[in-house]
Length: 263
Ligand SMILES: [Zn+2]
Image (cartoon, rainbow, N blue to C red; front, side, top):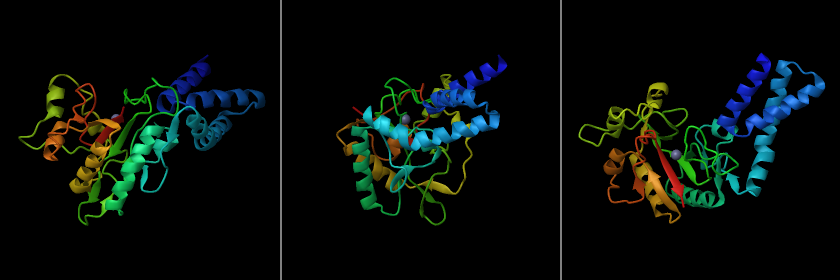
């Protein structure tokens, strides 16, 4: 019984984190039943099937049902390859077209930097949320990392947070401070990640490139909403941009990444 419970928990965890992993694990269990594999062999079997599926079966079948994987390398790429390994890099066709267009404009202006994406959506099933982002459930949402540079050399770089989230471009004194406001209202999750993610300390936001990127996003007709923290909206000169909204205290801080969504 205890074994059964363990398998069940593992299936639940894999489903929450990767969507498809739970089913693949059940599949591996089924195969193991025929061959009397031990625990290590089971894990190896699961890992192999999972990887093969992640790079072949899943992108193909997701495309048939309306979602496409974002590019794995090049100018537009995952900030952290785990995003791809966990199958969290799927968007619908419209969003893929939009972001590829934004990327080509961006790459033309800044050929030395890349556009780094964070969490997108799972491959299948509208309404299945990409934990912990409850709204990323329909192929129409995407998070992008800010643009960063090395503090001392100014060279374009990846991000101070290894996952792209959790290292904040915090409000300065006198600016709108929603992290403070939301925390006071009792939304303890709002800035939670900041306590968990270490700052590598070598990189700072490149405002020119980040502002250019946000401007390109605003210009895309299909993009309906963009979330960044209110103090950055003002600091970066976007006060009058109606597409840039405040996401609300029930979400998390958006002074570490850009959230965008299409109609
Ligand atoms: Zn988002």
